[in-house]
Image (cartoon, rainbow, N blue to C red; front, side, top):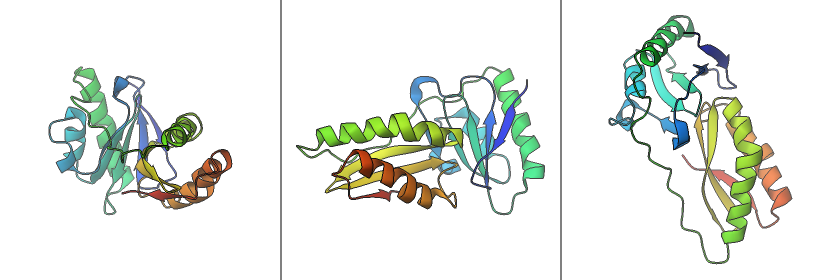
Length: 186
């Protein structure tokens, strides 16, 4: 089995492309620690068993793995590739159950603005961050402030704050004048 590997803007994260379906129609799933797996992903469980893996993020056709500060990609990358190849060759499922990120309640009168924000995120932002091994998820909108969560390679990336402020915030404010700012929710 051939698995492509791509670097991401986050030097602690690599993106692995197995050429197969990973999450299917469950969207993206971010496992921020071994405790967050809780039987939801056999693949994330075996990846977290590798010393040096600190975060696992899964998209429809990729897996992004974040290493701990002490880990070295020269040693960890071959172990991840072997683990992924073994998992897919055995035909085991990648995910059992996903949990959607919860959104803040939408206030009456904000429905149209929230719909515009979500459409812009889905069509203009999410494809770009998915290309870098991550995702951006809408969490809420209130009083002109859009709340977003960065996942995968984008979470903890040195450039994620600049991406949110200079990229996402400026684009959203251009198309939706009611938006005052964007804030990251961890």
